[in-house]
Length: 96
Image (tube, rainbow, N blue to C red; front, side, top):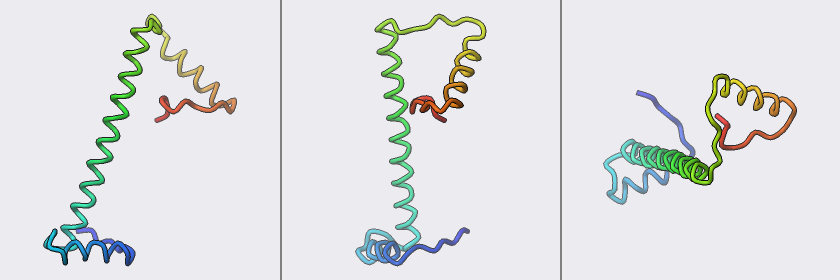
């Protein structure tokens, strides 16, 4: 089992949750808090995917499409690499 050291304000917060009867232990309070953050991270991740899909669908409806052809992905990658190497900012929606 992993042991972690947290700062005093965080320890006091978790202890207050236990003392208020919300949790049976500091460990349970910490687990619940971490789980809540993990769920929020997942919600944000899914939300960003939904936004990207909506943008893509809007582009398709607007006719902003490119016909796929052999070598297209390589061409796009090389163009992006060249732009990044020249110091141009990389668009947020294509960053890893």
